[in-house]
Image: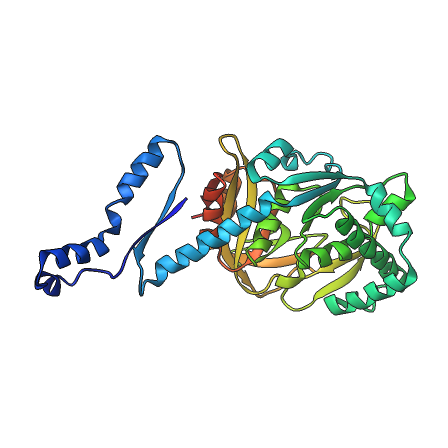
Length: 379
């Protein structure tokens, strides 16, 4: 429950009030300003009943601050509602050795209200085998709209990626998914390896269209990406690579899907002779996040409330990046690079997070409060 603790104006005009001709009129005018009076009554009763509530305090007219607060609460409520009606698809298995991303799906479903659908890579490979040439050509045309496709990308690899992208669209539609996480090597079964090594372009397009796709079976980060996308901020898969102590910056990025809606310029498609941490080779995406304010979000396990939202606000800044066929950006944070990584790590997050454009800590704190999750913002 969110209570609007509002009065008409910043203050009573005392002189004109005291000159009113009747006590009855004075009482009516006084009560018009008396919205703060019942708030302790309500708070007392709800607290004794263990009912959570929140307040917005201000004036009804000419107070932009409280209207911004109300807007943030409404956006947060939209996020909570969407998650409680969302279907998360999980395809494949966890990445061997990455214990930080292993997640309790009971907590995922119970805390967020998310329905979890367990999916088979074999289903995607079967759909892929049935994709026709006309659908592939249409998808190739879409590639040229979504991406900047370099001349160094072979037609064979583009066709392979287009076939998988068409299949992935059908797979998501068939299973009615709102977002998904995946990881699968496909070793020993060529069809599955062929599918999983050509999934990046299709995953990036889905992510840019509001169906976030997280690699490495990163369930928590799929949720973080979805939250950021619901707030209209994008939500691209990332992790920090390198600290640039000379510039006091953090270099962050990731291989695999990128969010086309928050890229600085068009996303480039690059061929990779070998994937790191994956089987095979194929096409990948290279992009930087739009320069300007950004927010990082990590969904972190919390033993008291199931999860907490870990948030940091910073800036995406111009400069040289690693041209390695990955999403890659340079970020500055108010306390500097050392302060950021130490504060971030102290909260025990998995090594992935979601990055979105704009400063959204206020929105995300309200999401956490509505969902009764923990919250920590890097100071």
